[in-house]
Amino acid sequence: MKTNVGGIDKIARIVIGALLILLALTGTIGVWGWIGVVPLATGLLNTCPAYSLLGINTCKTK
Image 1 (spheres, rainbow, N blue to C red):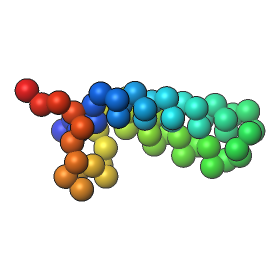
Image 2 (image 1 turned 180 degrees about the vertical axis):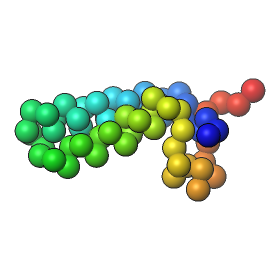
Image 3 (image 1 turned 90 degrees about the vertical axis):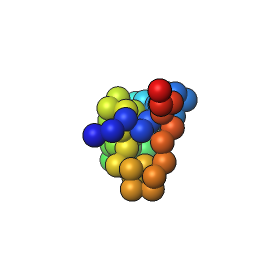
Image 4 (image 1 turned 135 degrees about the horizontal axis):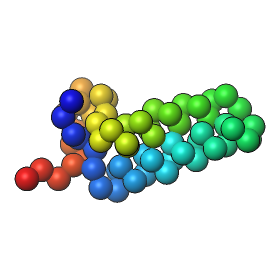
C-alpha cells in the first residue's frame, strides 16, 4: 500500500484513536469507542483506504 497519511494527520489519528480506545476501556463512552482502532491503525500504518479512494494524500512526497 502507498503511504498517504503524514504529518499532523498522522499524529491526530494516533491521538484520537488511542483516546477513543482508552475511553472505551474505562466505560466512559461504551463499545462505540472501539472504533478508535481504525484511526489508530491508519495512523500507525501511514495509509488510509478512504484517502486512496478519494485521491487524497497528506504525506509529503519526495
